Length: 269
Image (cartoon, rainbow, N blue to C red):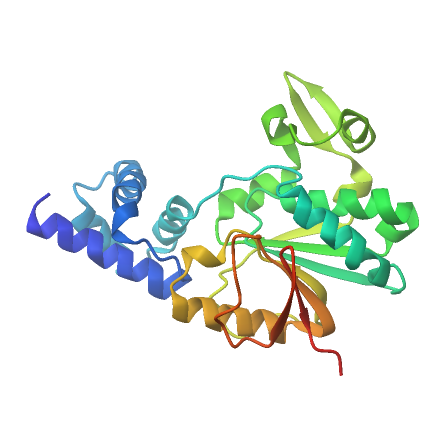
């Protein structure tokens, strides 16, 4: 790689960190270069240096979205980390069951698998009445992922962890190993494109629970702390944050009290 090309790559890596908090350490550099090269070819640009120049030029909104989509990791599936979901079902849903309105946010939701998993879990645990008073917001930085989530159509490989009986209840087979989310689940879910680095978050009402799983370790330490504080501010007193079991909040002074199993609680007033 030439000096100019390396400088272009570094400029894009810094842009990603500043713009959307995505940090790519050196050992993941080749993966990022491959993803950026696909964007470069799609926009008929000669090099990563040219891509960096275009990215920082006025009127580059579509290119910015393409780079953010390429850099974000979109591997996901239904019922991911069942131990975390079981803990949420056992500890949090009984509390939410007493609420007139249930408000949940899935941050960095990718193609919507987590959002519909939450809706399905509420329907199975609290019944149709509980689902009817539930509002789940799914946000992601990638516009194509948001569009896919809104469609609610998934290949069977996304649904391998869903029990057959649950699959029959909450999905409509479309043929060719493809399924659509049932209308009752879809009615409880809404999706928007959002950058987690946008401050302040554009919410008028706080959430009772926020899912932010397998996201924080893509941020550097400063962005992790800032994001955790912002999530704390977006949650009502006594509310919950759900992370992956691999993401520890122990070293962050964020206001969250870790319960275990990926669950963290905000202090009640």
